[in-house]
Length: 589
Image 1 (cartoon, helix red, strand yellow):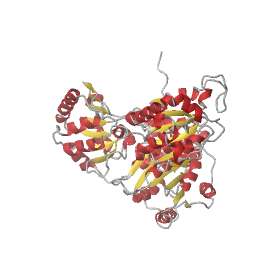
Image 2 (cartoon, one colour):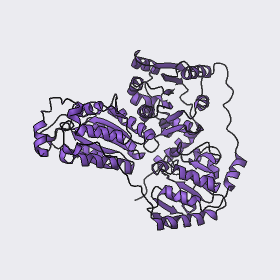
Image 3 (tube, helix red, strand yellow):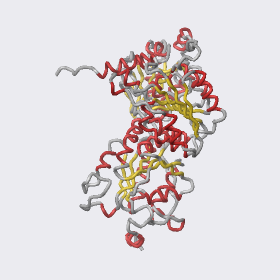
Image 4 (spheres, one colour):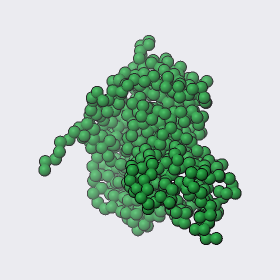
């Protein structure tokens, strides 16, 4: 029997649900997709059901090694897949056509900006409706169904529209393998009538992918190492700075090899925090221009040579384009290219190969590290408080610092938490994530859900502002439903504080909520959840003791009241510089 006859004999009207049982589904698209996700390391898929994806969801539910996590909305499902990918290396979400796709797309754009492989699967129209003049629901009322696809083309590295079983296997596997190779999201649309129909191409288990390692051009690698070693070995006080692309290049260990071999001090760019070990004796803090960790910025900017490994220089990371670094002093190492000062650039040279080879060619030079140790003064402790004094943000983060261990991970929301969390010193194996390039407020709620689902051996500590929580609060419900035990510090100051420091106005003030009351209502007595309000340091101490003691196996939500003007000094400086960059007048024509 040929494929066309087989499809014709088993097809049913789309209104009739397709039963899923082992005998009938052994050679179906739905089972293949489920098994492929498991094979690449996905154990949890974040979803919102809709009529175009229901049959597909049946097949995902039927896979015993896959857990379907139902989310409150598509945006949070996408953020959860983002958070999951940060811990597990790949994430996946499933939504319905257009109304779901255009809702999740903001999260997928964020994953693209952060180089995260997220498989975004959309249940699409019945395959018979393509190429007709039919107008379908969940569309903008035109017979052209390509609007969603065209939107995703700019925020994914490849797209697959599966509306024919003959090439479905190839399209699905090509898309998923591309996500892993490029470390970017992909879009897969699957017609709603196809998941349960057997087809010969799905007759066996998915063959594990073999993703050929990228190997540097040996001539280019040798030339780049030679030029870089000459450049650095004649410098007086060189330093190294880790950027966010170190993760996508899988070069963390090679970076440490350079630090160990060279004796150079190393810093991280803000979006690189958590990628390199902060317990390393050569670590000197976060390099962020005018808002760097104390003494770190001075050491980096006074250096006569620096390696930036995987940097992203944007207006936020450069503090409104105000970094005091010179191109002629810099070696810029991107995932597949090395540029030496104002001189040569070497392509198809991969970061891990380059750094490992460079480590063997560098003369030991600890001058900058010794300078740092000479000028370093340990951070002060917050001023002594008075009895019953309202809680200050710097006191809150002193206590959060004491919570950290190798069994925890920090999720920092866009806002002042960026700056306060940068100052946390991460113990060995402590996770750390935030979304600096895209900076979408509300990201952290879904990301906390996804990260905690992926890293069940860690307790996630999320620092979220009240303005951000109001965007995505609903999926605290899903955290409770999944039995997660994260600790959420809701920092309540009545507005969008980060935007206040860039440009203030009445639009930065938000409606006050009873946040613990909201979470208690979401909890509704089902699952483990504990909430507390804290206004003083004593109340905070009691709440943390309860969260790590009697309620250590519960989701803990701590509503922290702080003054609306209580911000980090770094945000004040950063905000004024970003404001200046935003308000530059047009260049004369």
